[in-house]
Length: 401
Length: 183
Image (cartoon, rainbow over the protein chains, first blue to last red):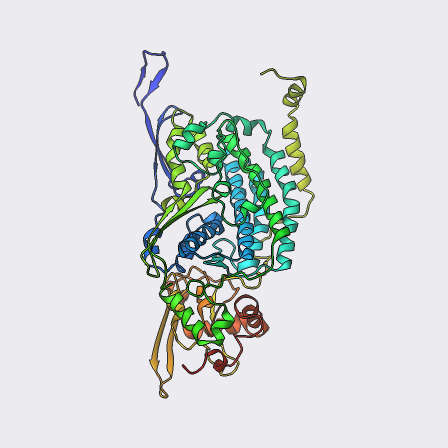
């Protein structure tokens, strides 16, 4: 390494060092590889390399029926698979022109918010661990366990749930299950207060997060950011408010926003979202109506099991839907955006009238957020790269697809 | 920004850190929530989706599967392989029914699809092996799984609560009831 004196400010200037951060780096939240060019401890250039988790979900979906695509969407953002499922089912329902029954919409809203709490808990746990707060990690997993247990009781799986169906949901929720969820929502605000006691005013946490990774509201909009990353900069954009799906337009809740657009504000926004999600779940439990959980649309929705077992038409219908997909799907395209914990997840589906999507494009928030990473990191210290990666909350399964 | 006296006291005496430490100290005296996994085991909730099993019929003592192939068709990961031939009385005979468990994504679409209630996902999740062949489950091994993990009331409850119609027991009824006529 050659060292020479620069003329401009008289400081020693070292040759730039190229550093590969990832793909196997615990703080990159998956298999993200960053090529960093460093001048001392300052990042001069940051180049994200993605694609290590590419499984070809979009191409695979062209060869699967609308029904079979559902488990693929689980594996986009595997931390909140419920939200992905709900987004996909909402998109396909809008394409087919059918509507899920009221009870199913309430269940979806409820489980979607559970997924948001799950995802934010994992985000808080790992983000705090990256920055140096170990205890929060353990406490967050304590609450996560209760929620994934509820998912297991509901549909048999803890992580990749495959719970919503086109036209409704798979299982009905029982009263005992709703009681357990209500118990959780009663104790959870106290738990949020615990996390805040630990890190909210902690001076190490403040020094690592305040004024780091600042992104202005205008730049955030220009870069296409969404979700808490955008709202941390003070833009009150939430798909659930602007293009409501589920029953979000019938519930009372607020969109928390930040002010400065730094890592700390994004953290605050997510902590407030915990409380909002908690209140949404409580409202859903109180208002959930009784009724069917699957739409009565024999051309698109799987028939009920008792009908399949007892008459020929429904048995044939089940065979056709499961092997070939719906035969009367309307031609055309649809774009449906949903608010997943990471941001705006959009499904653009083109249908050519057969039982399989002609093309399915996934607008993944993590993909857009990774593109904003160089702007956040360049000119700052290498230690702040970790805080920045954590604060934009990316999942590489969704980014690479 | 001017620092107030209150802020100054907080800064000097590490008030926020003391509060955090008090919380962790309090947790020290609450019961542990962790489980010492291999020694202490948690029972999976009923309906948990894990290792596969083929349902053994109470009536015939054989597999209920008739080899329609709907599970293989709907499987998103294509892990089910069914080989059938024509039997003596023009009945379809299932010669081989194989599941490549390593490919399975445990979506349980096969259970949802089956018009006979002939396949189930048990709640047995602790299986490991040294070779890939051990995870290639044949028909005999899948029937064994049913006897081991789902026999008796457990399988009955599983189908009733999660997959079956609410009033009828599809896993244990006679095949002719479920066949939907002789079409």
